[in-house]
Image (cartoon, rainbow, N blue to C red; front, side, top):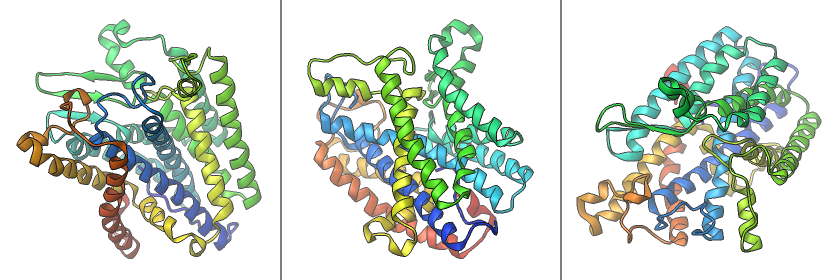
Length: 406
């Protein structure tokens, strides 16, 4: 979501049909994961489940998969951000221009995360969230430096960070004394209380996410090739990553800090197998999520050549995919305000703090069953879509410089 993608190119080797197709397929993928992200956030604010939906003992299969499928979102966002950075070079930007843009864009996303987005999550000015925009922002800043390397070196570094970071799972921030905060910034989820009344939630440690954006940047070179070449890579890479997940997760020695185990039922065992660590994302987590993302992109590349051929029910995904940052900010405010409005009749002014991230702060009788959550998810999309469509049309009509930051 952190990088507005326009896959059109001034490269004469790419024909018009190819340019349109790539734009549609990538925007479809990003729009899809934006919609899934909305489902996850709707569940977080409206669900009556006062436990982690991935808790195998407490959860049920529909609730588990409602949460699990949304794991696709963050890896796809950051992968596409890297892809978009590479494709911007194909549109005529120099590496110096791209580096400058990535640095400015990165710091802008970090600022938004710690202000507008944190407030949208909590409605409390003393809480700061370091979430997905934080991760994309810092990853862009690092990418701004790394793009000076040859593309093969960028790919190698990205893969090394993804594959190798679980070697350091045993390192804990408290072992590093006064420097522990640096390790939390890089590899360990943490909560900081710098002064009383101020809390800083660091949810997205950076090392593996940097690996994803670097890998996405390198993979961008594939999307400039012919249709046959692209489809070959997308299909083989997608299935290859999923097969690697099955092997590495099956061996159960490396690739995730939480090994899977045999449970009381077959279904629970399957859930244990696929329930991988997200904060930070383990090797197993990224293998399965990125593998699925590549296969979805392959499906879109195979099926949809022109925007005019897209099924009507999928076209809203294109709109969402073309204004990802704008949609991200808008949808959080809409969801949180809606949760407060629905809770006001029952809880009064306390409703302002009820729909909070920490389920322990919610009363036992708060929220709705899962099927109601799905209805509310659709309502949230119906509310936010017209706003995003208006902005997408405005953005396509005008070329103001500030629009590149939304």
